[in-house]
Length: 115
Image (tube, rainbow, N blue to C red; front, side):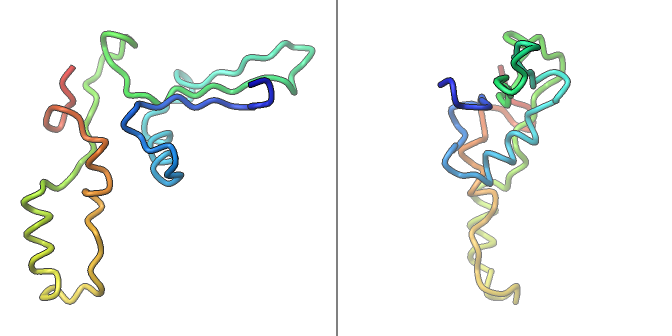
């Protein structure tokens, strides 16, 4: 573990093998002034470690005072309806809904995640 220069902490719903999703989560769940810190001895700056907390923030564990939003996603019914009429839309080759890609990140609640 000595040679790992930085650590990123994410929730267990994040697919850490998917670089696109990981970068999206880190960018959306991180406030650098609050969620990133470096540990280093002044005389050994090159051996410091960067830690980034890209987890969902909560009132209970983080003292976070705002509601934490769910990702904005289409529901399954809307996705199915668009899939049925895709060819009539002349929108090019059919693609999977981005909402399907991010559905594993959705938590219980509506626009706001329930704690």
